Each structure stands twice: as C-alpha cells, then as structure tokens.
Length: 459
Image (cartoon, rainbow, N blue to C red; front, top):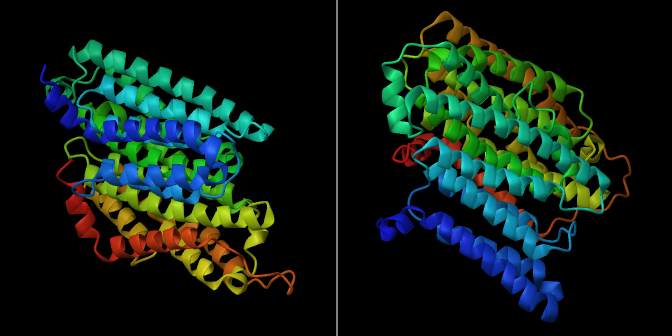
C-alpha cells in the first residue's frame, strides 16, 4: 500500500483531526491553568485556522463543510453553555472530519463510517449542556432516532452487497445498470431512503429536528443544520446515482411530498424562530429531494443538489446567528423578540432579511437559483409524475412565503413593545461573520455558475 498517496487523499481530514487534538491539548494543558478567560477565543481561533488550512484549492463539498465549521466556531465565541471548551471544539472538528471522509469515500461502507462518526459527535454536542434537562433530552431523542436510521442504512447496504457483491460506487453503478429490479432491490431502496430521511430531517422521520434545533446550543443547531446537510445530500445523490432509481423512486416521491407538506404547514404556526427554522429544514429537505424524483434514464443532478445544500447552509448559519443574538439579548428565541428589530439594530435586521429571503427563494439571492436548478433538473425528467412533483414543490414554495414574510413583518413593520428598549448589542466579530455570509448569499446568486463550476470537478 502506498501510504503517501493515502495521506494525500485524506489530507483534509487529517488536518482537521490534528487541529482537534491541538485544540484539546492547548486548552487543557495551557489555557485552563494560565489563561482561563481566553479559552474561547484561542480554541475558536485554532479551529478557524485548521479549517482554513483544510480549505485548499477550489470550493467544493469538502471545503464547504470546513467553511461552515469555521463559521460555527466564530459564532460560538462568548457562548457559555459548557465548561468543556476544548472538548466542544474538538467535537466540531471531528464531526467535520467525519463528513469530509464520507465525501471523499469511494465505497458505501467507508461513507457510512464517515457519516456515523459525524453523527456520534452530533449526539454528544446536542447534550453537551448538561445543566439544561431539555438539551440532554433532545440529545437522547436524537441518539435514538439516529440509531434507527443507522440500522436502516446498514441493512440497506447489506442488501446492496448481496445484490452486487461489492459496495464500491463504480462497481455498483455497473452492476445495477444491467440488473432488472427485484424485491430485494425495493427493500434495500426503502431502507436507504428511510435512513437518509432521518439524517436529512425529511418527513415523516423529522421528529427529532424541532427539539434539537430549539434546545441544543444555538451554534450546535446551526452546525447540524448546515454542515450535515451538505454532506448528507452529497452522499444521498451519489447513492442514488449508483443504485436502481426505479426501486428508489416510489419511496423518494412519498418522502418528498410529505416533507413539503408537513414542513411548510407546520412552520406557519410556530412561535419560536428556532422551531420555524427546524420545520423550514424539513421543507428544504423536500425541495432538494425533488432533484432525485426524475426518470431513471436521466443523470442525477448532483451539482445542482450540492449547490442547493451549500446555499441553504449559508443562509441557515446566518439565520441562527441572528437567533443567537436574540437569545443573548432576551434569553429566548420567541418570534415576538423580532418585533421592531429594525429600530434596535438596523444592520442586523437587513442581514436577517437577506437570509430569510434567500431561504424563501427570492431572486437574485442564492436560494432562488438553488431551487431553480433542482426544479429545472426535475422538469427535464419528462415523466408526468416528475413534472407533478416539481409543480407541487413550486406551489409549496409559494406557501412558504407566508411564514418567511411574517418574520420580516415583525422585523420591519411591528413596533417595539417598549420604546425605552436599548439597542441590540451584537459583537463586532459576529457582525463581520454575518455580513460575510450575507455577501456570500448575494454573490452566489448573482454569479451562480461560478459556484456550480467549482463544484463540478469533484462531482
């Protein structure tokens, strides 16, 4: 075995793992004893540096995961939800390394191991704030649902191995291309779709998401909503491209339609901004799955789906950054806390508007082109069912405007409850990060082909 080539192939993951160990050692051996007040900025700074080193070359799926990790590390500054500062940033980096290992994998078993490595760190991150019973309960619920999804995925992989004799992506693609659909293939397809639906918070397997998004620490919720989505959607698209889509199509259509309906309708009645973002994530899982509800003869639009995931992640991390500011100010994330935000912090209100409008898919922001590319790929599929699913997704996208515009109504139209409320204080570092994320959402919308072409070489 040529270890030099192996190290080069996984240099990004090794960089993040080494950074994680350095962060833990520096925190435990130096910062705790000598500079306890600087633990957060030093750990976050080392995390950002490690992610920056890992982001080499063109901007692709693995670089997007590293970028989201760095962004979450920055918004974590000043959060005092745990005393285990070094362990927290260690888990962030290990989760990113697991997701990137999954992206780089050439066979299904290694991809599964990378996905579960990231998932195990997510469970711990959610429950890391042991002082709050709600966080521990949400972490335990997430762990139970995650265990079921892992079992479904592993069973589906075992059936694929039984059908093809291999778990290599290229070998599976060739084997399934000449193999007629069988009952075992349909069972494997159901197991795979159920497992991925859990990971992506797609309905009806989304029940963990509202509690996790609401009760986990806000940076943790932002990380799960962004980096895990990019990695999960990339892996699902690759699996769909290698598997028999005739067998996957019925289950995919059911999950897609349920996600669109449940996600959008449930979001309308939410009074918590975090829970609204959770059900919005369910709906967005439905939108991106539209790209897989295409005729089996059509190629899987992996680039369009990953573009969607990246642009969604940018807007979601930004929105959670605003949630974090509200929680620091008022102690909660109730929608009523947005009332009159334009008067308390005009800059933050404008940034939130950019993120919300991108999530809603309003041009010329990146979210619009994410939906456009995915829906266009589905409409090119040709079958009446494909066109029907795409048309339904467009209809539900219009429905989603209601709750997104309700957020903006509170920000720009609703008056302050108390005219004596002081200006909303947001740290300079957080404002710079949110501004960069808003610029990324705008530029990715104004120049969408640049991001698509950057993603294409890896895909």
